Amino acid sequence: MSHPLTYVLHSGQMFGTERMALATVDALRGQIDGIIIAPPGPVHAAARAAGVPSEVVANRWAVLRALWRQLHRHPHSALLTTGVWQSAVGWALQRLTGGRGAHLHMVHGGTDERLSYGRKRWLSGLPLRFVAVSAFVRQRLLAHGVPAERIEVVGNFLPVGPVMQRAPFNEDGVRRVVMLSRLDRIKRVGLLFDALERVPGLGVMQFDIYGSGEEAAALCERARRHPNVTLHGFVPDASAALVDADLLLHTCPEEPFGLVLLEAFAAGVPVLVPNSGGAGDIVHHGINGWHFSANDATALGQQLQALTRVRASVLAGLAAGGRRALEQEHNPQRQAQRYAQLVEQPA
Image (tube, rainbow, N blue to C red; front, side, top):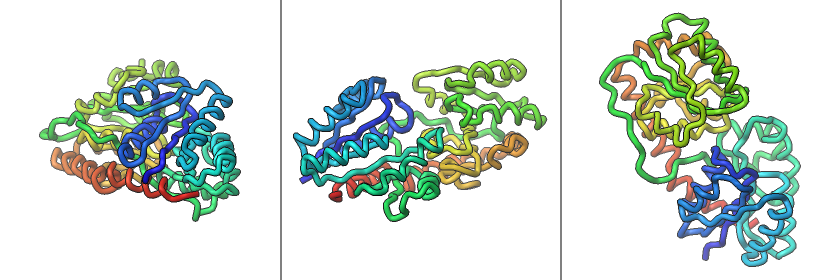
């Protein structure tokens, strides 16, 4: 008999963490029934559209009450938490209600080393397991003292469903490049402008950047000097732009995973990423994408320059490699089964 599952989010947005929470609960449906508890935000509308139950919690007291109700009704409910405070309170309530359900602390990473990884060791004394979304995230947890035997690596995956596809490659050279990224400092989107200013010959490429963030104004100002760069700001469902692209460019050297890379694989679009972080783990150079030296604008520019001459057959081969990676390494059924195994193990 399956136990209910409660997935507690620290944000109600629809970034990678929230999207994967929804995808995980949805993938387990029918085997393990789940509910999402999250602050106000678009994740609840997305949950309704997917037929996944969710509860809005505006503050910590509301989280506490929601968890108490869930555990009082289902003492053996598994808990998946994303915040240190949530895990500590959840563990206490599990003990109080006599619950023996699994407790997984989900580590999706983030932009702050201390908040994203450093404080996780505070939970090492509790009988829970840490789920890292990539080998890179596991390494960061180990660096901050989380015991290796308590960490499981379960990569992200895309929900099952139809995906818009790019037309097959029949012309040589990359011309249309898309970036789908928050415009925050850690994402290093400005590295593209550095590359354009250091490496000649990139004027034949068109760069379309989708996203918003703290650096938006500064990047828009820099774009004035580069007519082949367009910043579109935040656009709902911006991943639809992949069908018109020859390449997805990702510049963050500390990306915990990079769900957008899987979207590019699914759309049949090759990717170019730094040789570090979770993105560097996902992409195998020359097989399902290309690497450039992280934080090196000249290396980025030179790699882009080389891609202006790459043969269509090579682009098609890389696109096929991305699809194989989705099936072999990021298969939703296989990843969901891994979650099911972890959830069904008692604490």
